[in-house]
Amino acid sequence: MTGNRTVVRDADVEGLLRDLAPQVLGALVRRFGTFDTAEDAVQEALLAAAVQWPADGIPDNPRGWLLTVASRRLTDQLRSDVARHRRESAAAALLPPEALVVPAPAETDEGAAESDDTLTLLFLCCHPALSPSSQLALTLRAVGGLTTEQIARAFLVPDATIGQRISRAKQTIRAAGGRFERPPETEWAGRLEVVLQVLYLIFNEGYTATSGPDLQRPDLTAEAIRLARDVHRMLPDDPEVTGLLALMLLTDARRPARTRPDGSLVPLDCQDRSRWSRPMIHEGTALITAALARGPAGPYQLQAAIAAIHDEAPRAEDTDWAQILVLYETLEVVAPNPMVTLNRAVAVAMVRGPEAGLELLAALEVDPRMAGHHRLHAVRAHLLERAGDTEAAAAAYRTAARRTTSLPERRYLETRAARLEG
Image 1 (tube, rainbow, N blue to C red):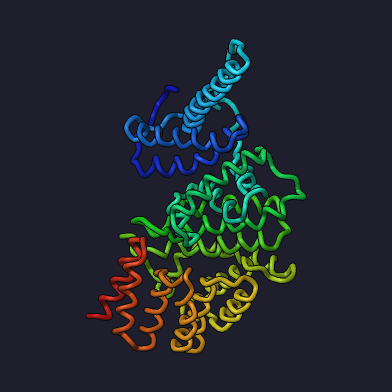
Image 2 (cartoon, rainbow, N blue to C red):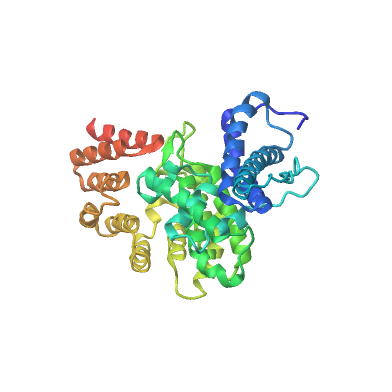
């Protein structure tokens, strides 16, 4: 593949590869029908690109380049597998092996329309033969482009557990004969809950990265919003689909004000709200208003309603915390979760005082999913600081800083501790 190439930074190549990976994987699965071997071939192509592109420049058609390399790797593997099987069969039957013929794929997709297979891949990863946890892990890996470590942190489980889930999930899809095509409408409801949860987790990882030097990964939030829009176009009357899209828009609207020029974190109550995206807020508010009018609210609608209240407040002190507390109490009934309890504790503190919020945190300290989580210690530190116990607050900030793998969060927590200690 020849032509003009543009030399770019490693970070630019990484972002481009993350965007293209699910598209190339989807095209390869549709063409060859083998998910597990297709993903292996795509990973090899991505590795080759990560080595070559920073030095040689990005090809004119980067998607076509990846598809060509991955297709060749997969074709070679298929030829090898078929040849081995024929040799074994021939030896058993004492017959000469027949000539192996495996049609080679097209070199590139240049000159043809580039269809986006990401949404179809999303539904394939949510195959009903998989357990919900495997569906989540596989989709986050194949569609979201998250690493095993990032997925493990999202699930609050060891890295090895996620690696095993992904491996078993690929084998299960192969054994179940999963095909690369949109499922019939009768199967949408069964897969939709997992699809929405996956998009939610992808968005969360993009909005607050679990590790690394940057607080945010706008590429992931943009991809999550794009996919949520696709699902919303498919199911425009589903209130939870609408609620999730609204939640993403209302939350991502604050992104420009969440960091300073040096990348350091700015907490919600200190953000310059004039920098929030008003078009996203208006769109998200319209969506959640329409969704709530359709009937009982689900977890995404409730979270979107909370986000809308934050976004509608001109100043932090104007936030209607009493209404937010009611919504969190409802959310804890509809979808109980330790993170919901953690957020409710903050709302309780804002309405009834920090001591009341600290009482709620005591129950989370014995929850194995939260006992070692940095956010539990960060919230405790914040409430202790508001209660006037600066020594205990500083210690809690230090504990939270040690337990987070996000550098911006760590620096922020250490700064808060140092301020109290000084």
